[in-house]
Length: 537
Image 1 (cartoon, one colour):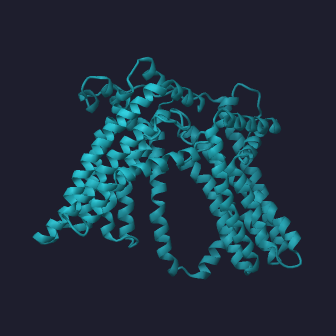
Image 2 (cartoon, rainbow, N blue to C red; image 1 turned 135 degrees about the vertical axis):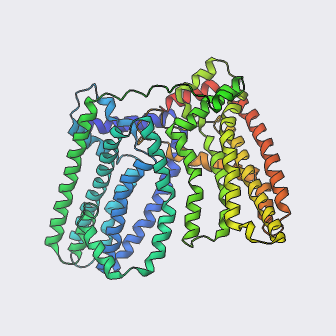
Image 3 (tube, one colour; image 1 turned 120 degrees about the vertical axis):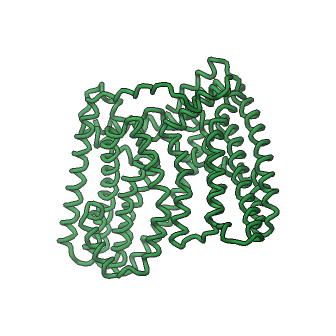
């Protein structure tokens, strides 16, 4: 059964690559990038062979524990897991839960991230190739690294599988999306605070903390070779036995969760809420405004859109926290508005893929592409523009505090505030115009509406990163006049008025041209786009 599941995983992966040459390209590029990172990590591990055992132990145990946490928390908060072997697909088949759990565990290692992680885990043995017992230490290091990687994958799948049953509803999905974005964006301030606290940490306390970590499931497998390298072979074997026991316990617990999922029905979708007299009821009549009303509902209810909005909403909090920690000067808060505008403008770069097969309704109704592009853009700008204006003004106030300055200084502040607002408007409007074109070129796989909040389509990471890079790069180039004038307003405040005019004027032209060109692409390539989004499901 396990072998059949692995063959199925490979067949699905091979079929996806055959259907889409784009995935092959990004797979090769991502593979080369990952191999470069792996090579650098292996060189560092090999260098640890010449360091004292205590130093190597601290690095390997701490790094291994972070790897386990990464496999556990990152799918939960950000990218999700590959749903190609979703247990719900086996509900009507006589598949025992334990072989399914083992097959999914090993199948997770067949992708590029899993394979690279497995090689990195086995490569930790390089840190223990020392002394006459180097061969035995190397074998123990490989075994410990493989057990550590399997523990990381099993723990991550157990947590996501258990949480999916609890957080599968729409409201819970929205809350999960917001919490995930908050957690990821607050990592920067957390690391900054940790870095500021490092000089005050006592090394003896740190060593004791690592000793405790080495006896937890996060560090057992990674600490076993270190004990053997220090001559404590008995302790090493005990740790390795405990690590294997933890792995077996995780697999059995995961199998129990899968057994419940195999016999439980998918929860029914929430009923549509009653009609409310809000902004949607006040929109004008017409096709583009009908599209805008539907997209505004997405921004309010769909966890995928909620997460994109939350990434811009929490930005002021993150920058304020960094400024409060002394990592950033208070003047850096001038960039709150521009960065929020950049994030929001680029958020529509894969909007057609988020529609999924429902995109057929636009084609069946004969909706002109220009109306589709205009409606989606209007939905973003109706709430994005006020948000960016408020973020720019608040950031400028906090950075400059104009009421504490004299008349001359207040004039300078107004010029710099106008420059920040101009850059923010230029980035938001330019990003919306670029996204209107990019999303009509080639959508990449996106999480389907109603899927588990912890699932992620196969092959979406690298195309998504490339599409975002193209979108943000083009946005930056088109908004460059407004951004340059905004930077110049720091020295010559009168440039702020020019930046505001350039951001609003040129941004409006970019939006108009993006809607026109994107609409023409939709009219010409609508059926191909529908085939692409259906194939990626």
